Amino acid sequence: MANAKENASSDVEELRADLDNLRNDMRKLLDHLGDSSESRVEHLKERISSASHQAGERMSAAKTAADAKIADNPMAAIAIAFGIGLVAGKLLDRR
Image 1 (cartoon, rainbow, N blue to C red):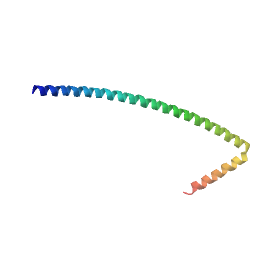
Image 2: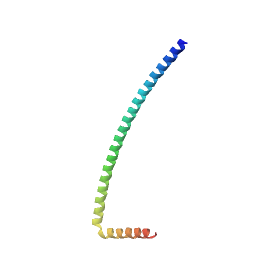
Image 3: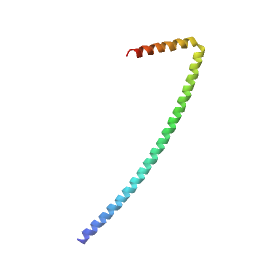
Image 4: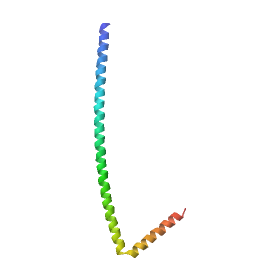
């Protein structure tokens, strides 16, 4: 009977040690996942910033090109703007 109690006691101690090890391993895993997700977020922020900067440069270049086309052909630009306005007006008038 005493032998059974000793075995149960040692089993409980082993179980506690295993649970402590599991708790420590889970803590390490969560810390690692947190670090990994933070680095991913930083990488995505950099990519978004770069894409935003490139889009801004492209928009600026497109605006400059459009301004040049309008300056070269002002009557054509007026006619195109009138046509777009007419089509938009007809589409919105259908309601």
